Image (cartoon, rainbow, N blue to C red; front, side):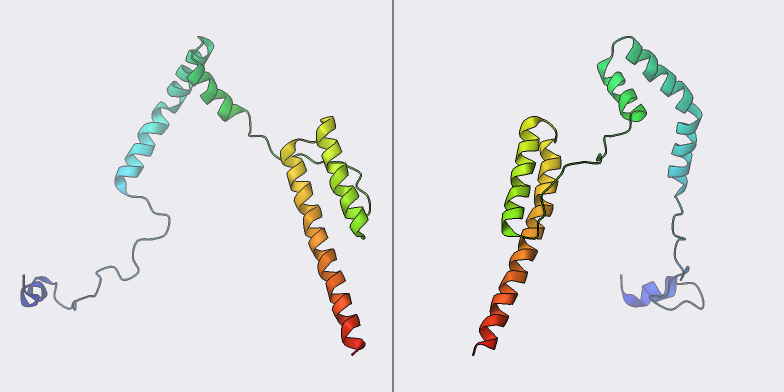
Length: 144
């Protein structure tokens, strides 16, 4: 098709590249097919839920897993109480890492929790190291 034919098909007053709806579709609006599908699902939701629970009671493990996933919230982080030594020195940081390792070995901490704590102590170690290097550089510069 040539551009001349396209321009001829436009409605009067519209220019090429101009939208008939310059604001576009409103944010969050759904198309008609989605709305019809949602309405159909809402109508049968109670019956579907009852059937899945019934199947779970009869021993269908897939249905049971589906019910449990919806009823039991996923595990979230829990507060961890672990006494750590002062981390203002290199020795304290080393002792803190050792305390985390002992807590995992004793079963007081889960490995994932220990990894999180160890990464926090590692960030502290890096900050301590940076501070110590800054002090050494400042001392060297004053002795020049």
